[in-house]
Image (cartoon, rainbow, N blue to C red; front, side):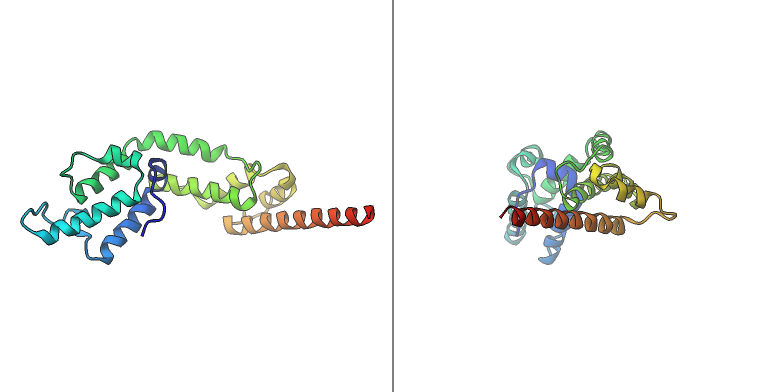
Length: 200
């Protein structure tokens, strides 16, 4: 079951995850041959084949946004395999230009008003999108990007992490900065509560 249709933008940035999930759905019902091209198609004299192919097409229509479908559709006789290949082609097209755009976003991303969790997720989403088009970001690069875009209030923590003899991995770096964020929020609440009591 697909709860949220995949838009063209989501498809471009997260195609691999969607494709793996869809592939596993087809495998669950022994229908993978309808999208990988191993099943001869179409079979107009085989009602069961037609039912299975229509089922997969309905899954595609229910899981991909209209903007992507409009580009992938090529007539009313298109099979599930034809639709699958067309959607894959949409993703594979212009990989280099998309890589330039995503790399620019990754390297210039800043925390802004986001929490550490939100900021980290944005970075990791860009890493996933780049990996999908063949540009792998190493863990060390992800740590550098995280530290570089932090708000000034975390400058001392970022400097401490950057000055370690062996730089921490992303998970440990994220944990340390998140702990600092929690402490600052707790201190701010405590100070506010003290001020309110003093006023009373």
